Length: 273
Length: 268
Image (tube, rainbow over all chains, first blue to last red; front, side):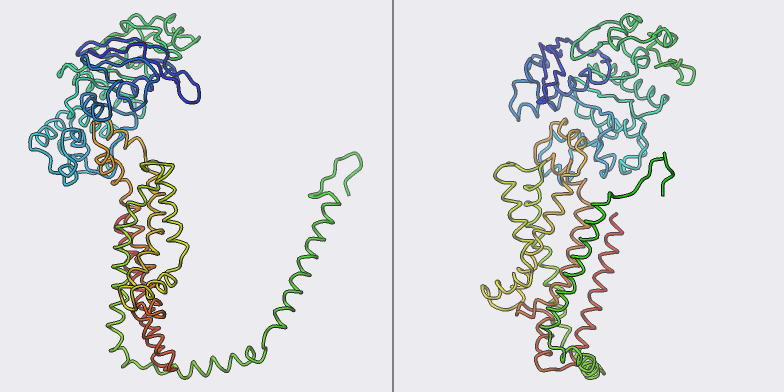
């Protein structure tokens, strides 16, 4: 469904952030993208919806070549790619409901959105999604009144109301505590399964990725150095991705591959990671 | 004196110390010379006489002619209207200029942005009293010239502060709106406008407050408002009336500061 062909990004400073990356993601497949800081994880996600303009190579979504679209075509294509951000990126001074409805901006006209006259079906869907992410009582609050976990849930609802085929998720848990991180990761993965959504999740926390995601892609200096199941992340592989370190210390959490729900409290927390 | 064998320390080396002393000497000499020049150019009779004149005018200013207030309500109302309408008019012109001047929203950084900055600078560098002089000559004396003078002066002020606020917004919120497939105008309305609203409201009441004060003097050059009354009273040396006018101006300015403080408090 999503295909990256020789995707390359060289910044004006000369840094090669992505070096001819090829990747294929099937419908409904969730991929965790791991790698050290500066490996190009964020750049890769942002090149897919062209928040960052790739230098060369192609991005294809359902047969449409995103990288060759004009401004109008890109806007239409972006409606099918929901994005979730590390710092939530909610519009802080708007209400929760407005933030969720902003996911429909690609479908409504300017004046309609200016006067907040969204179609009834959109509003009904917004309520359904807020209930699904557990915020049905908070729709009238301002976004800056919410806690980190709650904000990320609003971010998820905003991405889903776009009715996307693909979710681009940039470090969804990096600003959250360990328990909330797990809840958010579980929610994202459940929603992807419910709606047959493909997702690429950028994540620092290897143990968390192994716990919830079936396919791991390791990125190092802009190249893919690992692509396989969570169990395949042996200390040798982790050394290839991140560099030399005593990975056996993290072993208790790393042997995981447990993608089941669990009650949160009794799930293992990885030692060193 | 440092003990032998141990390193001493002083803030400056001896030549530098001498240079500093010499610099001070030059400064004091210059001050004395200036003092003498100004003193020679002053008619000391008037200066020594001033306490008596102050006492004289002060005596004539009391008691204030309170009955004159009846003739002041209308000009005061004009003054407030000049300030309010001028501020509103400036708002409509300043907002587009601000968006054109901000680096992150300008349509073109090489032609339109410098143009917008030029508008801001020229509006800011000319005092509203001078705008009023020009406009009275162009469109004749009256309230309308005052309104235009106030708004022309305010455009630069509002646009400058607003474009700085636009440049300081959080870009990820804008990116988030862009990724939903929103159009350019929607990105501005949903990603940028909510972020600058508090700054915008604060700037507007602040400028309105300043404009109340500026519009009280516009009448001096014929642009309407209470300044007209002030000038005519001064011309006929009607000191008790001048007192009433000054008291009214102070009361109005206090009132406008109170309003703007309340509004700003309510927003932030």
